[in-house]
Image (tube, rainbow, N blue to C red; front, side):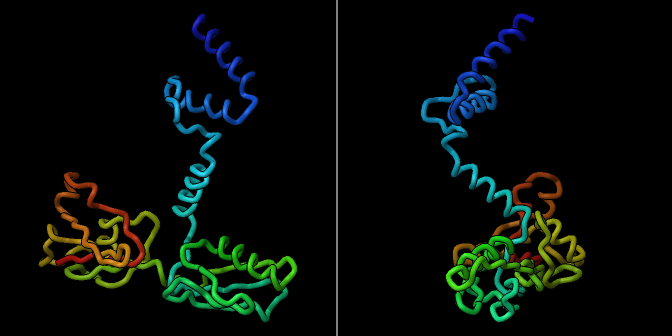
Length: 222
């Protein structure tokens, strides 16, 4: 009972001192650190607004579709049919629209692209309202080649791993060398090779090899 009363008193004092964001953040950090006071120089919630925005954007990109090259977009500007267009996303990730020419589309959600287009159109139109709809998804594909039952391109599902990619391809043929599978990926303009030993991953010895696939990845089953 005495311990509970002491905690209540401490909490009450903290609330009185929490007149600023820094005080609130410090109290939050203290709770998150198991009651320990953060070290000097440690970031608090009040001074890490940029970090919070980064985390929010990262969470958003994990749940919201991001436009990619070869996708087809229906860009509609309300009451402005001459500006509205159905356009493909070029290999450089841009689209072309009347009045504003090229706009970066790849890597953005449809909502963010609509906001970017609307911002550019404000130079020419009063309060433009823009809607972007992805009418053809061509960028979110992975490829499985080699000794599988159904080789070819497959839609990339959220969180899809190498194991799941192989399963979607129907599994292995009799001649597959399951110890020498690898994933080919373009990284910073260069092709890299990521090893995948099916037997070891299945036994739990190499779970880190069962990576999440990215658009354009190719699973090679020799």
